[in-house]
Image (cartoon, rainbow, N blue to C red; front, side, top):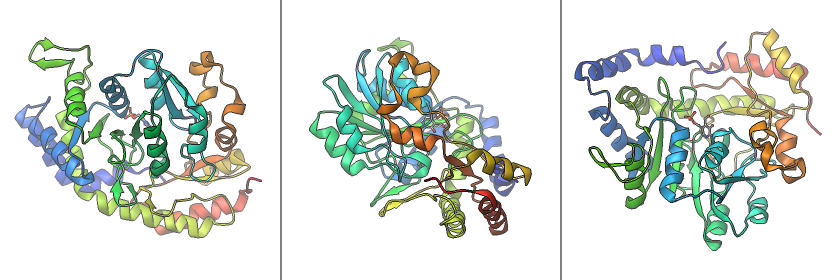
Length: 366
Ligand SMILES: Cc1ncc(COP(=O)(O)O)c(C=O)c1O
C-alpha cells in the first residue's frame, strides 16, 4: 500500500502527460514556454483570481510574495507554530522575525485569539497556513489584521482546491501562495509553486523578482532570484488540473469513509461548517501514536507524522528563545497527530483495512 500513489496516478493519465511532455521537448521552450502561460491562465480561471504566477516552489512563492510586499529585516511576521517550516523559514531567511501563533485545538489552524495577543508595534503581516487542506479562519483573521494595519498572506501550499464559504483557497487574502510539490493535492513532477493576487502592482513585482529583478532583458531594477517554474512542470500540471475536480471528489469520499469508521475510536478531523477541505492529509489524533504507527507498519500500512516538532522548538529557531508556554496547543497536538494514507485512488476496501487496524490499537487522547 502507498501513502500517496503517484505511480497509479501517472498510469491513469499517462497518454495525456506523455504527449504534453513530448510537446515541450519538441518545442524546446523549457523556460517561459507556452505551456507555462497557458497554465497560469487556467490556474487563475480555476480559482477565480486576476493573477496566477507560476514559480519554482511553494517556498520561493512565500519568499517572493514577502519581497514584493516589502518585508524588511526586523519586521515581525506572525505565522502558525504548528506547520511545515517553510512559512516561518522564509520570514527568517529575509531577516524578519517569525512570531509563532498557537493553533486551534479542533482545526489545527491559526488561533485568531492568540494572534490578537501576539501583535506588536513591529508586526507587519500575518501568514496563516490552511493546514491539511482546510482554510484557516480568514473572516476573523482578515478583520483583525485590517484593524491593525497588517497584510495577510494565505499559505495555501496544502489547500489548493479547498473552498471557504463561496470562495476558493488562494483568493481569500491580498496575496496567497501554493505548492505543487509532487505529494500535494495538485502536484507536479518535481518542484513548483504559484502566487495569487488581484493586485496588479504586486503581480508585476512578483514577476520581476522571480526573474532576477529584471524589468527588461539584462536591466535589473531589484535584487531578485531565479524562481521561475519550468515549462515541463506547467505542462504536467495542465493535464492534472483537468482531472483535479474528480480527484477532489474522490478524496472527499475517502475522508468520509475514514471518518465514518474511526469516529469515537480516535480524534477524527474537524471541518468547519462552510469549509470544504481538499484533504491534503487525513490526520487523526491518538494518545499512543508510536504504538499505532508500529502496528500499522506491521500490516504494511504506511503512515506519517505532520508535524512532530512545533516550530518554536526547532533548533533553527532556538535563537528566538520561545518557550512551550507560548503555544500549548501546538505542543500537545504535535505529540498526538498522525496521517493515514490519502489519495484519490485509495479503494474502499483499503480504507476499511486501515480503519480496522487503527481501531485495533488506538487510544483516545484525554
Ligand atoms: C504549509 C507549507 N508551506 C510551504 C511549503 C513549501 O512548499 P515547497 O515544498 O513547494 O517549497 C509546504 C510544503 O510542504 C507546506 O506544507
